[in-house]
Amino acid sequence: MTQRTSPQPGPATDYSPAQIRDIVRSLLDGEALPPIVQAGHPVLRQMAAPYDGQLEDSELDGLIAMMREVMHAAPGVGLAAPQLGIPLQIAVLEDQYEIDPASAAARSREPLAFMAVINPQYQPAGSDVETFYEGCLSVSGYQAVVSRHRTVELNCIDRDGRSLRQLYSGWQARIVQHETDHLHGTLYLDCAEIRSLTTNAEYAARWAQPDPGQARRALGFLPD
Image (tube, rainbow, N blue to C red):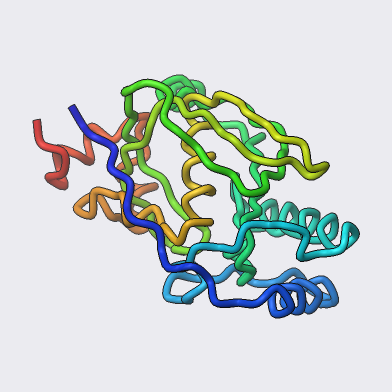
């Protein structure tokens, strides 16, 4: 059975609270949406700072709104603050896209209402894993197969400072894991079957089936 292994987190960010606040304020003052940071930028490989009030309430609200707008424009189903160059443990998640019923069923993909999570952590709930292609807005143009826990328990703080504990399964659990990993300096490629790596164009042309079985046989990853 495929095992899900978790890579080691990156080193803690060396940004001071004042530096983090200055970055956020600079982005909020910009006239255009900020670009999404790409792989190779150190902020994506560092443990983001836990959020403990580094921002004014209005700045936090503005940051969350901006992150949601960037996520929609990309488009994507999640965005972590480090993907905008901000080393804070904040992420936004939302999945309202329509996909074909066969893929939705195979991936247990159901709509996920918008949520902002602060200082999230997850734990597997059970031993089942699921293996599918996924991509990342910070690794533009590529996708790869990743085995992830089918069900996880998310622990986080919401925008109003309330502690939340919730179970997520299927594709929702995949989004939770992907975005939380970002906050720990982990990219999906750290967990991926590298032989499955494909450009978006090749994925669309060859491997967009509901599950990665054909790709597994042709590209030689996860052998029987």
